[in-house]
Each structure stands twice: as structure tokens, then as C-alpha cells.
Length: 250
Length: 307
Image (tube, rainbow over all chains, first blue to last red; front, side, top):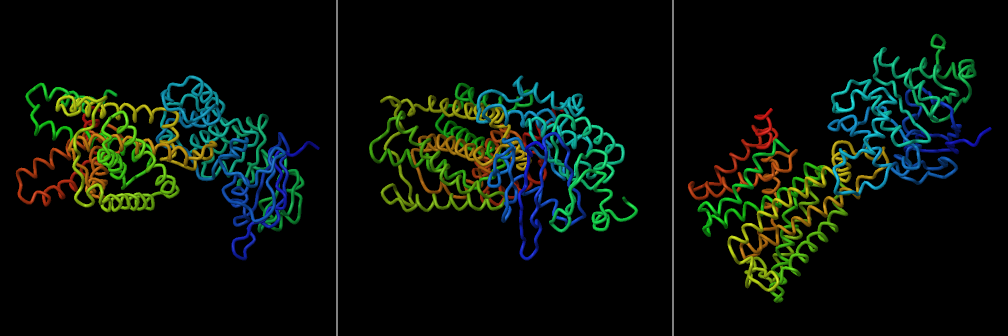
């Protein structure tokens, strides 16, 4: 077995008496799509915050690419190669789609403490930004203000921004949340294309999408991982069915 | 830049005015006040509209610059080559120390903490008995430039102020368009987004705050020389409020709006004070109406007209 890219070791987080993360251990292997599913209140959001550096766990370790990043801030983890998207779309609405991505490119390419040249006319950042936009199918929308894009396009733009940071791991927080059926289909097609090139940790509600995309699935219930396995194993796991899937959904 | 014809015309008019018969003492004094306050307002607009940092203590950096001139004057240091860097440096240092604390907060907290630092500067200045205390300090002379009394010349001083204003505008515009400015603008709209591409907004905001403070210090240097007088009133929160008002009146989204805002503010204030007995009772409501009905400020009005 290959060395895991992301390893969570016995993460714990309490809010008052409530154990929101209750000893979570989990490995994401290079090249796989690892999905985390769980009912509402299972602690998915807190877990993402712990992985990305928004919330510091009470105990345990987050090891990324062999390095303990438990104490690093969000920006530092991003620079180490851990990119994320947000459950609620997060773009700069007043910037064009291109400028949104170019911001990520300039963060990666050299210092952002540059004061003289107009950033909008930097060929190197714009070219790299266009590549990322093309990768998600937004090349023809480059000059549109991000605030004027459709919901599905904003989702895709957020992916392009994450890709522009040249991540080693993509953490997707419910990328399908709020998307209509048609948009969902297009986003799943897009994620399927990205699948071959990126290691992805996918947190998602949409079961059909998870079962279509994921290589492995971990099920989170009340802050604990109750099962990890392939899609088939998870579908067949009686404990999971009882805790989460319900008889008719499975 | 095509939409910026009006502020450019204003700068041209200011440049031409002394040659067209407006070169008297009254006119040049008034215009110097307009240009210097416009300079401070543009640097504040850079903070408010560019970085999203609504400071209610910007007059403090202007005051620090002005007091640097006064204090050095009291110790017989009147050479511009030393006074100007001291004024800018003192204001930048003040901004760095106060900004390091203030920028850890945001929103209303940031407004209140900048107000508090401004008032601290105000009371400090009031207690400087050696430099006039409450009454203020009258300079022995204007700052000298390599030993010459260049700034004492009305016309020269006029064009120095005009040049400083134009330079301020150009500098702030350049900064906002740069990589640095892009981070500031993005963080104003969505700080979380900036963090998620791997950049912490704090150092960028702090540098912006120091730059705006340094420009404020330069404006304070000019203001002290324009009036040859420095007093705590120039640091009061009312002055900070006036600067903020000029920015809002001109339109927050455009740097040059602050130039229009400063011109309109000072001219209206001066005209009313000359013609109406209880002018403040007219001035206040006029300002309120302007804010209510001029969405996007004066600059928004200009841009809308031109499609």
C-alpha cells in the first residue's frame, strides 16, 4: 500500500460536553477519490475545518504528505498543496472569473508584495489562469464578473481557483450542494474528468454522486468513522444501512 | 481612465487658476486647503474603497506629520530634506504601531479602535505644553528647501501641493492595480477566499495602512506649512470624520471621487460660512441629503452620465 497523502490520526474535538470529532482516523491514498458521508450533525463540517486549519483539534494529528500540519494556518496548508472548495460558494464577486483564478496563480507564483506593474496585464498569471478555466469549461466566461455567473458556473469557477493553486489534494465540501439536476450532471462529469489527475477528499450528501465517483467511502456518524471501504462494501454494510442509508435509499 | 475626465479637469483648473487671476492670497490659501485635504482623502479612499479598512482616525496621521514639522521647528530644524522624511516617517510609524493592533479587528470594531487611537493622538498633542498644548503652535517660518525659502513663495507652494495631490492619486491607483492591490481588493470582498488561495490578508492590510498613513503624514507636512500653524484641532475625530465624509461624498469605489468630494466639501463649507449666519445648520442637512440621494457619490453621478 502506498504512503497515504493525508492521514488523520485520532482527531478529537469537543464543544462543551459534545464530542463533535470523536477519535477520527482516516487515510487518503494518492490518486484516489475518498468520500466522507454521514447524516446531518455527524461532524462533517468540523472535520473539514480541522483538516483545512480553520479549527484546531483538541487532540490528534493531521499529517499531510508526510508532514504534521496540525498547527499550520489555512493559508499555509494551501501553500503546502491542500486546496479546498466551500459548501457555500466562495468567490470574489466583483472580480472577473479570470481575475479570481489569477489571484490564486499569483499566490503560487512569486510574491504578492509587488506594487508597480498592473496585475491584470501580467501574461504569465493570466495564461495559467486561462488554463485552469479551460480545465473546468469556463474559458469563454473568463471576462464575466464572478457575481454574474450562474450557480453551476460559480461552482466550476471555485474548482478552477482550487486547481490553480496546483494542489496535491483537493478537498471538496459538498460540491453539488444547491445545484439543479442539470448542473449536477455537468459537475459530476467535470469531477469524473478531474478524477484521473487529482487526489480528492469528497464530502458530499448526494449518494448517487458519491457512489458514482468514489473509490473508497468513510461513513461518519456522531463524530466517529463507523466504516471505511469500497462503494460495494459500504452499500453492503448492515451497520451503515442502519445508521445512515435507510432501507429504501440503499 | 476615460471616466476620470472630471477630476483631471479639476487638477488642470487648479493648475491654471493662479495664471487666470486667482493667484491672490485668499484664493491660493483656499486652494491649498482643498488640495491638501484632497490628498489626505485620496489616501483614506485607498484604505476604505481599496482595502475595506474604514478608518475614523486618519486625521491622526495627518496630525502626526504636522506636529513633526512643529516640533522640529521648535528645535530649529527647518530643512525640508530632514523635516519631510521625519513627518512621513513619524506618521508611518504611528500607523504601523496602531495598525498592528487595529487590523486584528474588523467592521465596527475597526472603526472604534481607529477612533480611539485618533483621540489618543489628539489628547497627546493637547498635552504637549512645550509645543503650544491646546492653543497650538505657530511656526517661525515655512520649511526651507536646501536653505532657500522656496515654499514661502505662494505660487511655488501652490504647485507643490498640486503635484503632491496628483502624485498621491497616481501612486494609490498604481498600488490598487498591482498584485498587492489585487490581494487587498479581493480581501475586501471576500477574505476567506484570499486565505483559501494561500494568502493571509493581515500583512497586506497592514502595509496598506502604513502607506496611507505615510501619505497622511506628507499631507500634514504641507498643511503645517500652508497655515504655518499646528493645533490639536487638526487631529480631532471631527477632522477624521470630515475626511471620511469627503470619501463617501465623492464615492467610495473610485479613488478620484475623493478629490471631487474634498473640492465640493471645502468650497461648500467656505461659501456657506461666508453667506449664511448659522451655516452649520444648513451644511449638516445638505451633507445628509447628499449621502442619501447620491448613491455612488459624486463620481457615481459622473460615471452614470457617461454610460
